[in-house]
Amino acid sequence: MFASDVRVPPVARRAALPAGQTALVPGSWLAGGLALSTLAVAAMIAATGQTVIFTPGSRILFWCTAVIGITLRWLFRRPRSEGQRIARDAAESLGLFALLCLLGAVATYPIAAFSTGFHDGALERIDAMLRFDWRDWYNVVAAHRPLQRLGAAAYASIFVTPALLLGYFAWAGRQAEARRFIVAFWLAAVTTLLLFAFFPAEGPLATLWHGPIPYMPASALYQAELIPELRSRALTVINLGDLRGLVCAPSFHTSSAVLYMAAAWPFPRLRWPVVAINGAMLLATPVEGTHYLADMLFGAVVALAALAVVTALVRTLPSDKEPGRRPQH
Image (cartoon, rainbow, N blue to C red; front, side, top):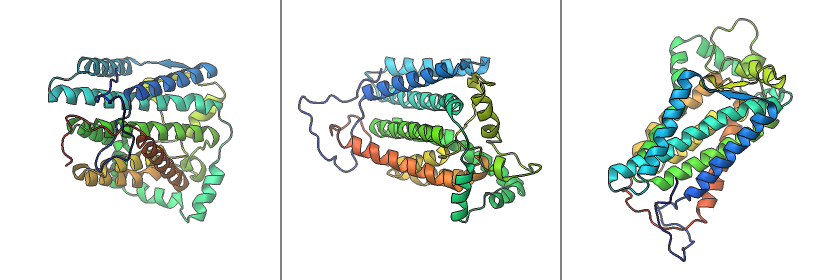
């Protein structure tokens, strides 16, 4: 399914890549990583006795997306026109990204079931050392309806930016950059999930706010409500039509924002729009994601580590030029 777009000569030259050129991550790596991730999530679900269900709406959306993506990727595996190449690359990158997001969200449920305790106290102490008071930030947002609307929209843009990035990469013939971004995103997601297993938290809304809640943010109290139910096995059904993000620390919204901005930075057409959108998302994350500042800092570190690992990995790959690439804009 993920056949490489370039034919590597018998003796591949492994050297530093020329400026502006990125090696192509092998499609077999992507397929292998997706298969291993799927098996790992399935094994965790089986170990906790959980089941995955499709609501009618989610079933149609999921299967239509999967079937269309796989069909286009297979039909246009050897494109005969620029349009077919764009369709192939877009189907591959958007399909992979969507599946990774789905797997990551599902994985939080069995991981939460395995976890023990909450680490809000340590996160609060870090915030105190940083002189950040989450309640002050929340009070400002709760008192201004426009900030609530803007914050909710900015927080939801985590799903918009990757479509913009991957769509641009497909149009511009930047399959290597698309694959590199997906690998970095996958690595950051895996790291976040591993850390979540050892450092679960309820979130500042549940631990710091007392009394009536004047404004319920996008993440609400799902971590504080669902994690105990998952641990006690009172909740064993994972509804794909009603998935909730259960990770508090590290903040994956923050990791995603750093990865999005890093991917867009080399391209002037994307750079400032992506920076503006994700800057707004970062400002909205403490309230809408009910995150401590410590969560966000840890999320940024996770993203930077993932970028460093992928950069080092790409340098080991053959430096063959991709055919059909458009100039950078």
